[in-house]
Length: 427
Image (cartoon, rainbow, N blue to C red; front, side, top):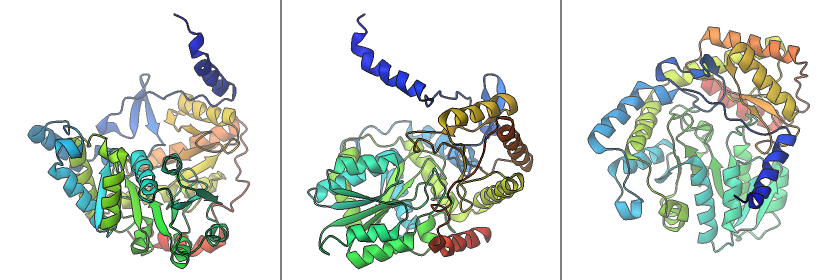
């Protein structure tokens, strides 16, 4: 076989390896009754990364919903909603999500990535590419791809920098179609958007707003509606996007908003129109999780209790994190090679799994360990984990310091953070 035609792919992989950022998948056997302990090469390993924030993936409410639905309705969805029909579970799920965010209508996609990409692309098509899009520089890849696919003119504003955002927007006429896209909580840093600042600018300059709440839904808020809900700003946001694979523990993505906007995106999004519907049992699991977490605070309470314990122990051990303000705890380990060494050492010596984060997920030179907890972590697990991380950093001579807290601790956000922390502590 002539392999010369593959040389561009081989060079690509070789270059990644030279840069010490080649990604080896960590193969595990995930067992329901031992979670967050998994099997890896015959060893018990405790997981300290991922996004199953509330352990809903193994919750009896979700498991029972799947089992019952499979027995009664089978497995697949039968195709796209336009051709195969729209089954009742997904309609119920969309209505429940709209209710969660106090919006008129919801629309479910097969993944959170697709819901961002397809929705933003559709907004561009609906506006005949006349929409001017303003995007936070730390927005997720799915948002970036959606903006690129939209064909609209875009402007990137400095992260959480309201002065820069206003300077960009104010240069356009008030009646120019404009959209601000941002995340409520940034998954690699754990810091929270200045949502009130964005709402103020959007109101002043007649802009649409689109917020990605994927790392906040289920975890934040009295019913798990996210940070916009905590701040009483949901009604000021035009489109709220979320994930069903993280706090809700299943898979899928969605948008909620004004009925006219959602209907337009439903009718103009190729990513929605030409994608098969989520399988019926998966939709049933999502619905069960969403409805359960609207009422139960048990999982959120335990999650925040564990996060608080970890942060206090980090302070005790002198371990720096990028943000003390959220449930996402990112420990800076500058350098792709060094961050990989830390991850490998903790796995091989302490049976702990924490995947190191490197480029292109974060900028080169900003590598880190992204640490998350869930209600299934015990106090013993937490103490062992922090002690092991502290030992690893010392053994490998890692200078764990955060050279700039400006992004995470901007003084104008303190009131927002304090309100969130106060409400969460009262759960």
